[in-house]
Image 1 (cartoon, rainbow, N blue to C red):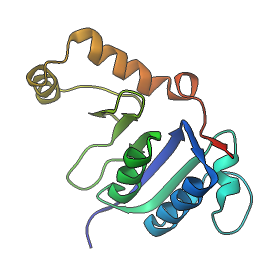
Image 2 (spheres, rainbow, N blue to C red):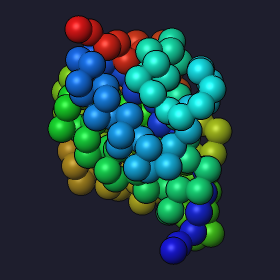
Image 3 (cartoon, helix red, strand yellow):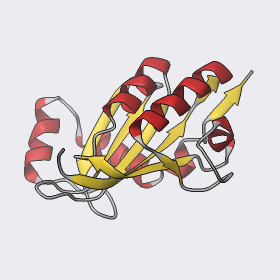
Length: 152
C-alpha cells in the first residue's frame, strides 16, 4: 500500500466495441468509477457519454499504468489528472496517440512547469513552442480532443 490520491482520466479518439469492452475491464481493474452516466457498474455505455471522464479516488501514487499502457497500445489519446499526494505534486499527463507522444507536468488547477521540468524538456530537444503547445493542449483538452468514439 502506498499514498492514495484522487486521479481522473478522460479519453479521446476512436475504437471499436471490442476495444471499448477491454478498456472498461482495465478501468474496473483500476477501481475507476464514472464521473457521470448510467448508475451501476461501469459499462461501455459510460464510454459513449459525451464527456467520458473516469476517476479513482484511492489511486495508489496516482498510478494508472495498466490503463495508460492499454490506451497507448490501442492508439487512444488520454488526459490523466491527479491531486497532490504525500510526497508529490498534483499534475497532468497528456498522451497524444496521433503522434505517439506523452507530456507530463505538475500543476494543481492548470499545468505549470518548474525549473527541473524545463531542463528535462530541453534535454529532450523540445522547443519552447512545442512545450507551450502541449500546455495549451492540456488546458483545452475538451476542445482540442474530441470525446472517444466507439465505431462498429
